[in-house]
Length: 373
Image 1 (cartoon, one colour):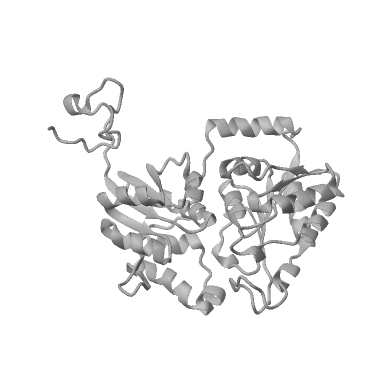
Image 2 (cartoon, helix red, strand yellow):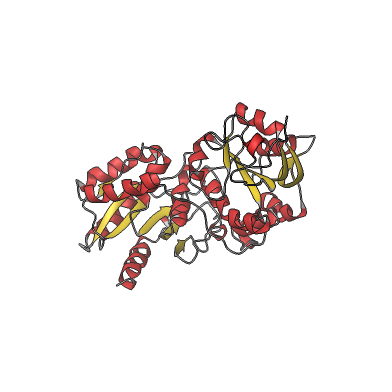
């Protein structure tokens, strides 16, 4: 048996190119593996999308490399059509079987969780960065660069009051990368780009239309990260009174009923996009508005990835950790002693949500569109 090629094209299952025998004839298009890197990221979908901002820095550090990524099944399609990633593994038994037999140069675990930490410890790599677990099942930092990130999880004063660094910045430090404020990486394929154009034609969107997208909800894990339906209605009424804006409701399956309630109130005056067609179709809809009004959710991270002007409000989550890349405004409850808090239940009647400045949202949105004229 001849030596197995050091080439990404070669799988050992079928020819890399039709009627070309790599073992006999050599590589037709050699693509060396270089450094083999595995990213472990089993956290929320927004976190997975934010972690894509590390990919350009990884390629700067390891220009000849192969990047693998393991994530939860519901997040796999976030990474579709990503030019930096060679293969995405869904987190399941089959993937773990395969990964257990592979050898990596570097494992980068972004998650401070027992599940991800156990996986990082189990797999073979010359270097492990980020987080693992010890013999007692406790989460531990695996390298010096991960220590600040680790302490953010243990010190509320550091996380809620002192830290001014974005999540991308301290994750780059965790992975021992050169931080250059790289953007998220999210790309549509040709079919999706055509779908977007067809949809705009179907609903009568014209090139000069001023469109505002409302990402109305958030994940069920932290239900208090969203505005009330009443607040959305007040805002939309204000925008419609200008007689210049088109309004689109955006969201996922968990937002279907809420969006329908809002849409029925306005009876055909706004566009209620479908929320049950999957992540990629939802991204297609979100690509259409120029401005996205949103809470801290996957929809917010998607808007950042799509390079939209983002008006984001915050209550229980840490606004300092979010980078809008100079394309938007962050609204947060200044002076409120209990925010941020990351609590799933609020003992103070959701004062941070009540404090959202609706007039400022209108003012900032109008100012953005006026500034483009």
